[in-house]
Amino acid sequence: MAKQDFYEILGISKDASAAEIKKAYRKKAIEFHPDKNPDDSNAEEKFKKAAEAYEVLSDADKKAKYDRFGHQAFENGGAGGFGGGAGGMNMDDIFSQFGDIFGGGGGFGGFGGGRGRAQVKGSNLRIRVKLTLEEIANGVEKKIKVKRKKVAKGTTYKTCSTCNGQGQVTRIQNTILGRMQTSAPCNTCGGSGQTIDSKPSNADAHGMLSTEETVSIKIPAGVVEGMQLKVSGKGNEAPGNGISGDLLVAIEEQAHPTLQREGDNLHYDLYISFSEAALGTSKEIDAVTGKVRIKIESGVQSGKILRLRNKGIPSINNYGSGDLLVHVNVWTPKTLNKEQKEFFEKMNEDSNFQPNPEKEDKSFFEKVKDMFT
Image (tube, rainbow, N blue to C red; front, side):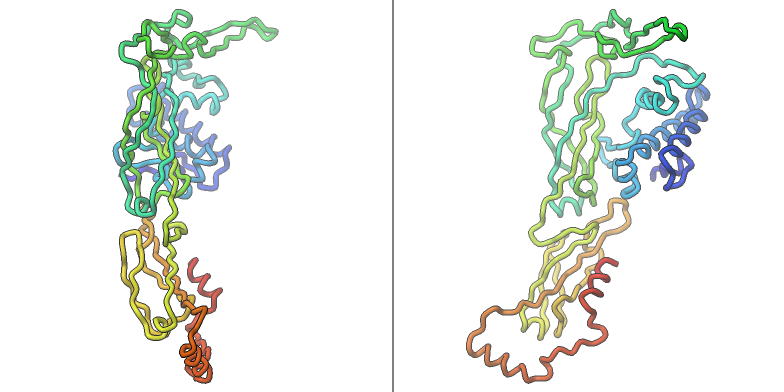
């Protein structure tokens, strides 16, 4: 099922300013907040969607990627749980935004105030995956070995005695304005509300152990250099009952020996001889789907561009595929033997060998313009 547009969710236009995005999210968050709509699953779903939209549109880099690639910039429909918005967010992640939106430390106007300790999340891991042009064109599943920290077998935890499992410590200070109450993460447990009870000797101070795991990553067709995908829950685990971090996968495109990529289009330089240009020929060339044979008409001119429709890279937004542009280059021999030289000297006087461009023979600049349109 297609995901709803983020701008539509917040009720704003694509040219909305950062302040307008923030204001729209605040309005939606107040309207659909769970404390204001108890036991209303529809309101909670809208609340989460608004948070997902804000999480992307409030970040300049994520917003730019979303504007260019849509939801596919952050998601993959396969197993592994790709998501770049709130797809991997839980309610605690969402409420953590409120310090920015409502100017506080996670409270919500008059609704509910504190919601208990935040669930600790493990750290994210980052890897780079190199892809060939063929893999990018067709999509691919990669199995990558990843070193990630996991809770060691036999590790047990107990309630933190400093914060009594709340994960936060409340302090009351006397100031000239009166008594001020502030909350901060507990220094003893790091905000998890739990401390180590027992652990095996090979585990670290937090009861974690470094392990190697093979992770399956489904990469959609049409990804581009520098795009980052997310595999939810495949980063480092968190101590206690926390949730695992994510695995962030940066795409690196390997150079192809004969094809050059430009967006969803591909370019191929085809060299033919004088005789092939004059007589016509057929050539087998590379495409990302395999070899293709093309026909070269007799009398073809150097610089001619042949467009093979839908032989390029599939659009990441499912808008079809780009084209394969074949640039014809007539190769001029650098050395001639006596017989060849005499032939061309004789042809210098032949009117058929004199340049005589027709209207349909476009100039170089017209060809470049056509290539980009």
